[in-house]
Length: 478
Image (cartoon, rainbow, N blue to C red; front, side, top):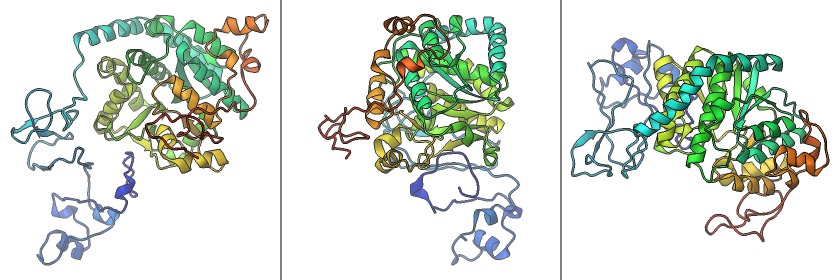
């Protein structure tokens, strides 16, 4: 995988593992006759040769790559069926009954969805009629207004004078995270003029503009999205908000702009756009932060749909149109991430979409998996020794916990007096007349982080040994 970058997150436990290559023509074998003879097993006493990836593939005109693992530790078999019509998909068969139950060795092998786990859980189901109707209603509204929406958005984008736009979307329930992002970025001196916020309600529009952001608000599309925060990942409010994440990316991408999409539960240490402008990365169409989860439903990419970079080209435009049209699956699966990964997989195979996952082992883009499981990575950030560009507070149940984690990690800059307040209320409490872009920054932002302890078993800027744990039997992080 060092020779060929397949884009998938590598498993560090398999470093220096060998790959088995099968050749369907003698002409495809390496040119070195000694190696070729060993590969053909002409001497039964001689084992298969071990050679470099470049040597092994030097005469391959084409190469099909299959990633294999054994989720569930089943007695797995791999069947390579030659002489048939070429397929670029893998069929999965499992011993099971016809209902939603798990692996049962007493049954014959049956064709099975890749989302049917050995434990009997079905991760991929077709959308039901009410999922489809709900999707069609909002899609109809979008399509009927698409030309007007694009024209107005194009006018705003042209005034931003940048070819790379940082795209955020937010509802009122999550607005304090958006405001903290603005305050945190301000404290570090970042220029936020290339950020475009897609608020899902008018109250968030006012707050975003008050924090200095450019906004694009489309009431017809956002009318069905709740203002409240989600109670947990995957609940109905969370799922509704996911449509906003689909639309804002699709629109900016369609209009020809490269973009960095980010959830609002993020803080910057360095401007992440600079990373993606490196010329050495030009071969990829999309980059995603590694989610860190290795559930079967996220295979093979485990892409985090809350932080990713997209180059605008015909492949990515088709990808995000496809996601828009397939959003009934988001309703059915309660996951924007799951649907997007399934489309990444198909578009990689069908159209050659070049996908790159930024592996969780790299230091530059830490998220929830590092926050909860990599103490040394968090300590390096606190010491100012890390190469991190961002910290994304993913892998967290809800907004309340995100806020508490940011507070004790020293990444909370929003004054309490501005939390969960409407724009007018913040101004009236301070006897400020008028409005304007950025009017809330001086009122709501602290120049220094507002640090407080909440959980002893989570990363913290100061010792929090006297705080309760959040995890069962959680020990002090210090």
